[in-house]
Length: 362
Image 1 (cartoon, one colour):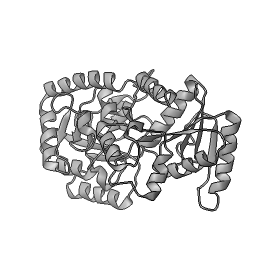
Image 2 (cartoon, rainbow, N blue to C red; image 1 turned 60 degrees about the vertical axis):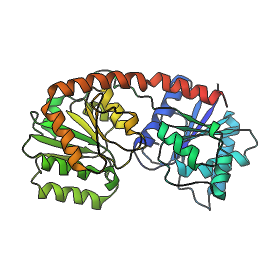
Image 3 (cartoon, rainbow, N blue to C red; image 1 turned 180 degrees about the vertical axis):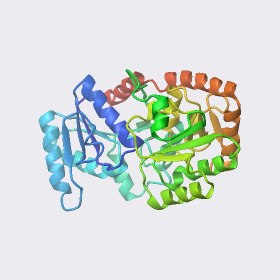
Image 4 (cartoon, rainbow, N blue to C red; image 1 turned 90 degrees about the vertical axis):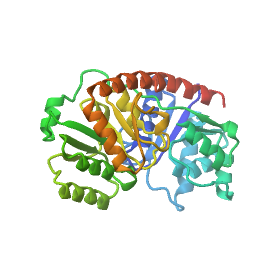
């Protein structure tokens, strides 16, 4: 069994960080063969269970000191795989590989969209030292083959593995709605995403205003990345007299339980590489609406297991919300089909079984 050193020094708390925590905790619970390195006091640092090594900010002044410390960890624990989740950690990982006397291999799990060619001298140096790039969608796999200076045979697709919350529910709909001062009889939309413009929360607010004749309310859940954008959202809420119908919550550790008490979950982003919240909502039996860009159309088949709207077009979004609002039969159909689709496609155990196969074949 390979011993893995998982590195992610991202200070954020989004889908990438949540996956890293899931990865580390899965291997820790099942095989005890993983060690993790993350940023001190980060969200990751507080939630992983494996033997943990926290780093401060990596800089030109301390990078080689940190490399020396990590090489000692690699030697002590006989580690042979470095797993990288965050692009900014790649250079650090490559230097560790180069200076280590032990033969180690780098696995990079790419989750973010690629927007330009990365075939300059620096990126050639990086990707020549990466042994396996794993991507989450076919769309991203095609982009990696097009833009990265790496042998296409080293790029493999592996979709997410997702589990439903187990045990007794900690969120009861009546209590939850009362706590956030929502009307339990209103059609309730959830948007789970970092709060920044490209995530498109403003499109949903515009749509609700356009559908003001209906009893619709909106819950925005996510870490604020741009205070000016959040202020803009609140100004729209005030402008359209939606103060009692729109609530903002910070990041939550139990998004799927909240999804289960909503009428629909919307992903209004300009372009999402994958759209994890769509798959999670499907597993919870909550109908989904997503923008028709990036990896989302790989998840949603329009009017079969969800609805797609034209990206950045809130009129198109409004039409889809209205369609869902007005048809109980459609909501039921989408819920059943989505659950079956997500249960098969995003099986948690199969994901990690396939990941282990890819690593073992290096």
